[in-house]
Image (cartoon, rainbow, N blue to C red):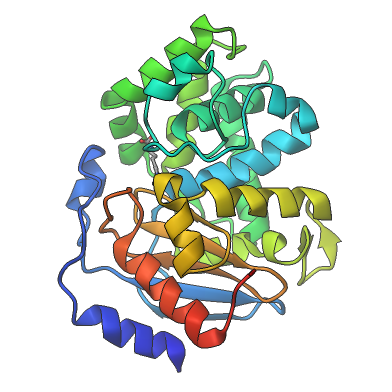
Amino acid sequence: MILDAILRQVSVRRDYGALAEYIAPLGRIDPGKFGIAVAMRDGGVISVGDAEEPFSIQSISKVFALTLALGKIGDALWERVGREPSGNRFNSIVQLEYENGVPRNPFINAGAIVLCDVLLAGHEPKEAIGETLRFLRFLSDDDGILIDSEVAAAEKTGGFRNFALANFMMACGNLLHPPELALGVYFHQCAVAMSCRQLALAGRYLAFGGVNPSTGRSVVSPQCARRVNALMLTCGHYDGSGDFAFSVGVPGKSGVGGGILAIVPDVASVAVWSPGLNEHGNSKFGTAALQTLTTEMNWSVF
Ligand code: DON
């Protein structure tokens, strides 16, 4: 079947792309790892390769943080974060000054730091982190999901750009908590480790109109799910978002751990992992695998 064919295709390639070495533990991952999982409406998961092995979800966590932040403050979020593609790298600083400390979208680092500030809501970082972790465990129906503390520590040690972004937004009045608290939440949510199977299951509410199709229970409103998907399509791959939409054709969110969550509305939620990254910081083989899968299955939102 198609997933086996994809695994055969990638297993002979060695042009993996670059590891995210600026986060030390991610630079030590075997670049030959590859897994893919497809979670269907009935909760069945089809997977191949290293689909059961947890990896650092990194910026894919921003999808779930956005969902929670919209649940907390609704449309008021859009006074603090935009909804346009940035056309810049995920950790770019340049645009933020021109635009008065309002990040272009919730998926670039600056935007996600604002989401973490919203999730803090006057509480301690560990409470906000706990809320995100509980949400992920609930969505995947798996209490085994954990934060990789080594990754979280490395994010902090090397997080000079993120400190710069947070400090600048604080100066502009777009953070309500001290930058180190918002960053504490941010670094830990990026360091959540999940397998392709867990991630694909967690994404199903986005594929099925905000509903967990296994229980029939609403997770978020259909409108919220549509909006998160729209932002994944337009901003989920940073300055590679246009190319991802062109070649894969469905909403997707990448992380520098090499994961991608892709949503095929009304059909499936797909998670892929291959740690090597392309020039935009998105998984190289992960993107290629999704392109093959959506092409062969005739899956597209267009
Ligand atoms: O803040 C960072 O740079 C990382 N924790 C997350 C970046 C990321 O995953 C961007 N995605 N492609």
